[in-house]
Amino acid sequence: MHSLARLYIKTAIIFLMLGLGIGGWALVVRELGGGYPSVYVISAHTHAILVGFVMLMILGVALWMFPRPAGEDQRYSPALAIVAYWLITIGTAARMTGELARTASGAAWLRWSIVVSGLLQIAGLAVFFYTMWSRIRPAGSRAREKAGERF
Image (cartoon, rainbow, N blue to C red):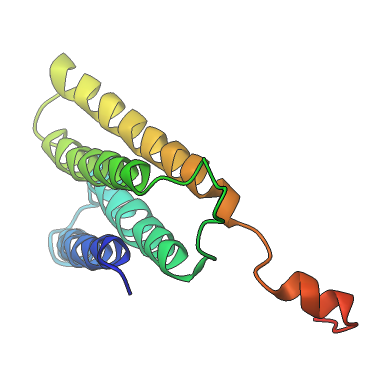
């Protein structure tokens, strides 16, 4: 496994731990605190788990497992995959932090930071799939299918 795939996957695990921590806190608030966690806490938990963990894990495994770029491939760029990593990671961390801070403040700058961080997440995913698009191709299955193999 190469270093970029490891970076995605290890970061995903960090987001899983953060998401579990937020979820545990929300559980204590609900079960022992006599109330329900804020929608902002729920949103922070959801983004930590679904974008931070699930998406980064999927993207890291895709980098690792998808066929290598073809020799003439002009689209795949490890630099773009790194840009995507930082956009998603910073966007998700800022989104989580902003959502948690929203439980205490409704300041306009905080609301805008949550919007911007969500847009960073979207941009990161778009950049990742742009650069990976050409790697979504058959890598030997075409020859097996031509020989009559079905799967």
